Image 1 (cartoon, helix red, strand yellow):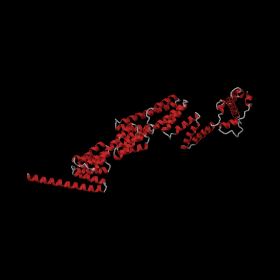
Image 2 (image 1 turned 180 degrees about the vertical axis):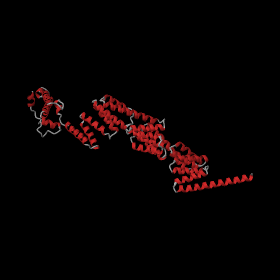
Image 3 (image 1 turned 30 degrees about the horizontal axis):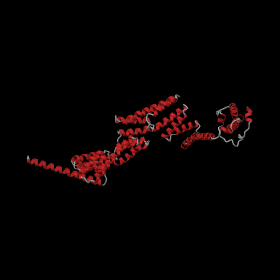
Image 4 (image 1 turned 180 degrees about the horizontal axis):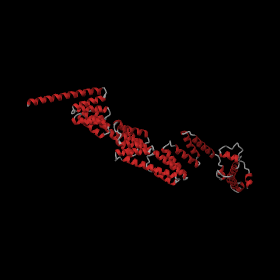
Length: 467
């Protein structure tokens, strides 16, 4: 029995020695590939070394280093943790564990690992430097959290950019940055970040939520709802996705209800429904811009022209490329005889979209502006622009009698002068508006100075012709 025992022991030692030599050989080959930056092959040989000798901490440490170079930080973290479980004094294992935690955005765990390194090697400069980085990351997280609460989304993006320079593999930081980019209206950038994460992890509920948020803010509500529902399938307790989904459905329903009321000529109801829709989500810039413009249209129908102008201005503040809002505001300016403002809006529209329709609108506004700078003969006589010949004659008789100099002979010199001026204007207005050719040219905005128009001299024949 002793002989058999010795033989078995010798055989086992021989086998163990063989596997150890084999494992060392695999490790050396892995080191060579690592030195040549062929990390995939290095990974394969370190794995073979681990399979041959699964209790060697340095093999796990080497494979962790290789995985870090391949940006596979979660796997690298597992190998680093296994390495220090096998050897708690394995300094490189603790250092790599800390770096993995840092890259994944776990600053507290990273700090603990670096502290362990410094207990083993108090002067380790790498650990000292990384420990400071972990502290900086903690400060950036705290600053971002406070900024988000204050809705200072630009500050959050700034913090996350700095944080990601230290924690490049942290999905949480990427998601927060993407969410804030969406809230800032920078949808393509936000979508790009979310899509990158979804390519790596199609079940990431946060990335699905941000993708939906971008679509929601771009007024693609039906598609957005699909993403929110998918996010809730992945994470039923995702409160942001639940709230966004509820808002999206409510906003769509209220907007459609308002549109239906408008189509049914129930402008009061439409106005109220658009108002209610605007209160649902102040962050939805594009949809709210459309709602403001819709409410302005309803307001114009209700003769609330000043409110309609304000609503169009609100729409343009939210989306300064919204042509429909410029057109609606320009029409309201025309209706309220604010022609300079109307021309400005039509010029903006025509610069953006050079269509024949927009050109016609601009020319019409410019004509009305030009006409507004002349004397308004219709106002002088107190008649509308569609007044008949008889109405013009009657108005002339009334105004001429009201301002005739004989009527004010006992007044002060200042009043006499003012009334004489008005009397001349009445005569001038009648001269133009009673002559079909002159009236047509006047209405079309042509100058009458060289066309035999009224010469401004007092000629009482007008008054006595009808008096």
